[in-house]
Image (cartoon, rainbow, N blue to C red):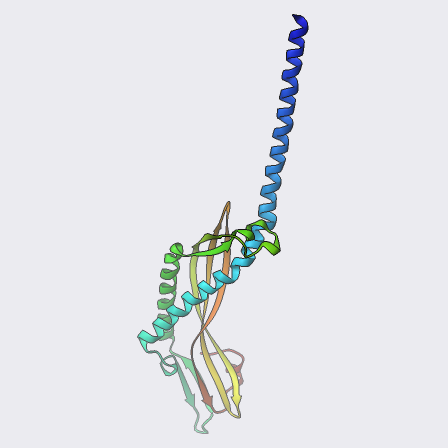
Amino acid sequence: MQTYKVVKVTKRRKVKSKLKICLCFLLVFVILVVAYYFAVVCPAVVALSQEKVRSIATKTVSEVVGQVLTEGGYTYDDLVEVSYSSENKVSQISTNSTQVNLLVREVTALVQERFDQIDNTSISVSLGSFSGIPFLFGYGPQIKLNLVPVGTVQTSFDTKFLSAGINQTLHSLYFDVDAVLGLILPGSTQNFQTNLQILICESVIVGEIPSIYLQGQIA
């Protein structure tokens, strides 16, 4: 009887030992899978998604700027005043700061509004991309990943001068729009910083322009 009990206890110990070993292997496997996901899979999916996210941001901002400029009917002369000297040389180039500030605020508000609605937008990434193996990218069913706006949209006004011939200078006006979009991945959210420059309008200025403006300074 005593021998039977010893054998039974020994078997229980062996079962517990095997169970512990299995649990250890399972824990190690889970840790390796999680590490592989964050170290290999996430960067691969992010790299594949980056251009899609930027495309959505660019399209959104371009549509807003186009809408604002079309509805407002803004032209180069509405935003910039070029003054000439008695010798028909460019003496001053100044912006209509009031109009520019209103325009910047309007664009910022509308872009922020559109981005706030982007919660309903998603991009598709193939299941094979989640393997982290390059030759499987693009294969398998499409997995939808949602986009979310992160933070606030920042809009600024920029101007550039480019030679367009003898005594002719192309003056271009731009919006610089900075925004952050978040891509929701299983277990994490990846933020994408988007810096976009959208042309507002441009005009060719005839006459010699003072160097201070060619260096990017405008009143």
